[in-house]
Image (cartoon, rainbow, N blue to C red; front, side, top):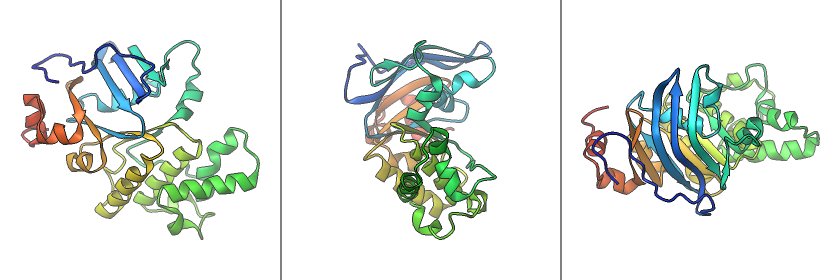
Length: 270
């Protein structure tokens, strides 16, 4: 699994029916106004595991992440070729409804973004109500369950009517994760979810990720290599739009096959 320059494709003979993998990107090329940001990347994301994407700023990590639930196409001038498969189904086929698939592949952004006019409760319940769920008892159960999964319930259970924006930054981020979980996604994408948080809040996010992978396939973009080592099972190193190396996290950090990967994880650049 190494390359000197240019694109690196760690997959051969991709099989969409491979049940070990929840999500597969095949020969993905993503552009902004004709300029390649992701260059012919192929990668498999194992079911109920955490995969970290690392690399310096501007290397294509977030763009690749946005390609996985068709958010990339929402940017003016963006284009994509290649395939993204969820359980063997091509997410970019004409039969797919992007809104429906984004419920299957939820996303948590770098900056917490609670709905500013909504309470803590309504932030979590919003997607449920939008999808037509009206049974308050069921909504109450889901809201509590999702707040528990995001390690937030004990901190807010007596303040559910307070604005979501009244929470601390770390609590807001966990609220956004609870909101994403409420619509029962199959995959959870996280773009630098702890980059703006203090060490204690970061620890809670990481503990939550470790717990959530029992039920979800998680893909996290992070600049924090220690975080990648702590929470991920697999790691992909990206550089200048290319996937340079991909493998088990311990192998990437302890025995990288590629010289550029080694220099990056050793802190020689980035």
